[in-house]
Amino acid sequence: MKHGQKQSRRGSVAVITIIVLLLTSLFIIGIVSGSARDLDSSARRLETVQAFYAAEAGMNMALRELMINSDEDSDGTIGSISDDATDANDPAIGVARVVVSLTSTPPNQSIDSQGRSGQAKRKIVAVVN
View (tube, one colour):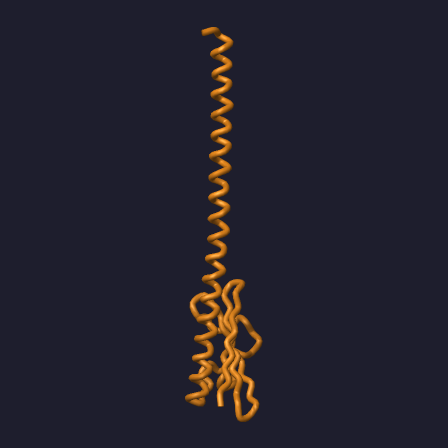
């Protein structure tokens, strides 16, 4: 084998090695970025569930106030929960927050429970006689 042929083979092997490394790194980047999108979607779904359960818990707290005819959260209204336009004192249900407002139009009362967690918000409305 001549000296020029050895260098040519070494050069070919080096180029092939670089191409394989480049393709491998592109494949890994694709997997990582795909996983990040899935992880973000999972986090948004979790926030949605947390907001829903906070809204449901707020509804239960408001209905309890109406049933026992007592303002248990001291917001000034029986059947509302932290309905004072101050987000800082809204009850925490896990990592979610909730606020419940009450609208009375006899003979009905409308209870509007709004839960929020991260970017997600959920609302539950009930009408009570």
